Image (cartoon, rainbow, N blue to C red):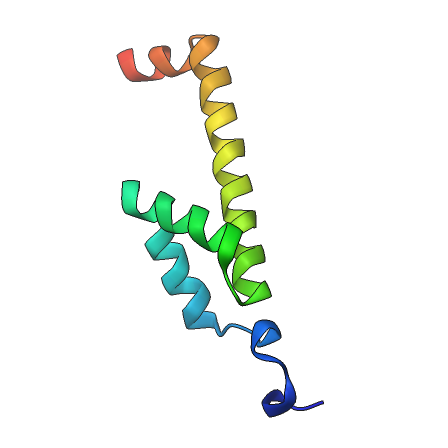
Length: 80
């Protein structure tokens, strides 16, 4: 099966597509809204899975930050 015969929903994303989507997702509020939309409604399966993995990464980072904040580690780093 060659690239032209792949259905549109399964066409691979190029390296620059991943790079640009990651930059867009990093924009504070607009990026988060865009991330949610792409994770739930993207037509391309590769983009949808990338958005979901990025969303999972954000959840892990937030949970780690909350744990560090709850233990006082974050305030110790900021105060010193």
